[in-house]
Length: 82
Image 1 (tube, rainbow, N blue to C red):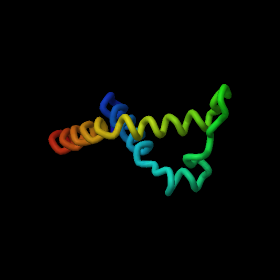
Image 2 (cartoon, rainbow, N blue to C red):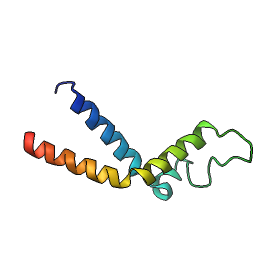
Image 3 (tube, rainbow, N blue to C red):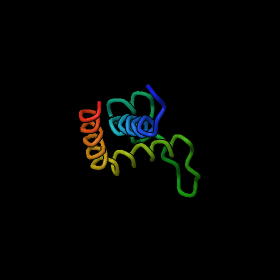
């Protein structure tokens, strides 16, 4: 398998899919990253854990519909061009 731009794009899509399917109650709370974890007080700088949780929630919220479209396009391209 060659190292091409399409391979990089496909890798980014797979990583985004992996983030998008993480479930807070079933997976993240088991490792201590649930909804109530990482909440700081007013004026406190959020830590790395809180920022990572915020990134996961943002990706799951914003990228839901675009991921469906991009995944469908990738499937069609793979079916057409192998």
